[in-house]
Length: 504
Image (tube, rainbow, N blue to C red; front, top):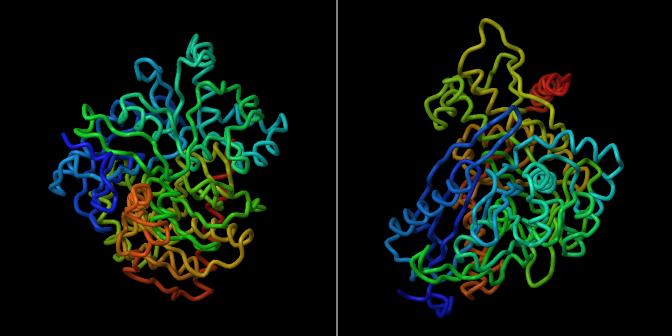
């Protein structure tokens, strides 16, 4: 079989992006910056207790392999023709496996999981918030990997001692996939994923001894942290069909920031997938949020960190999935736009707060739960569906207000993710945000960002600016709603939000 680790990037512009997400594993082949083939395999999450969210690691691995095979077949290329691989992944999801065998010791604990809410409350009560914010840029919340890993090491008998002896590996999904793709040769991650663990000092660029002590995590269990463009190893012929270098890695939201070509301070993107994530580039400056947003690593290249401010909505696309699978109100996500147009955006005072797994920024309430408010006997199915879509815009408005308090005026937001094929939602976003919303020609920006990083790693692109040169706007959505109408909608949203936050 061909060994593409010996090829020059300039000789082949075929790049493979692996996009392992919360509800599906995807792979996209890019040729000369264009999508040449796509594979996607969906899978289910598991909810063993209220607030617990898990995934089967072997399903993550198997569906990733299946998606890769689909993408290569669709593109009509064999594995050895791929110049390099880029990986992007759901962040914070936590896995623990044996170094010798690669066997995972427990289901993956998903970023949405709330099982460590009591532990987080205790850490905050003990005064750890300032230390966590200063070192990691994050807030104390079950969202992040550290308390998930601590829970695993405490809950699994004897495994803490094995971790201290270096017999176990902790990783986010990128580390797990790299381990499997390289046949166990590399236990590595990149700076963006490390920054989401709450164990990493994002200014020092290394694991923090203070945070490791706080969370009782032994350093021996951690992966090596590399730049977003680096030598992450090579696939084995046994698992991939050829030796192909892995040259780019970034967490999904940072990959989307790169794929949206947000390379200047102030440039902002918002991704609407399983959750929604608004990120603004803040350059090389560590900006501490006064509005409970996260300071995080946007990307790290050649040892230089570009920082970002981020706000997280835990439930976006998953709320549409809930409408379909749990309530049976829609047949598919595509029909939500029909519902919104049928109501002309009028929900009759109905609001949906999709706090199924708590609320993220700027509220940070892991105990909040979802609700539907304002129901009457006249409330229709289409109005409930429309209210669910509208909640994405209201939550994004809250995030953008917080972001602008920290970073100044944001006049344009670039959007991506599976939900933005919905033109009604995009226009409603522009109206509620009172901001121009741009949708790119390539909406697969998360995968595109991973491919860009891989391309830089093999010399197909000189740098991120060159890689992002192909970014183009497909459509601009200009705000057209009156201030009076916007204020009325947001006032109703705030009432519903207060109800969701008034839990026992």
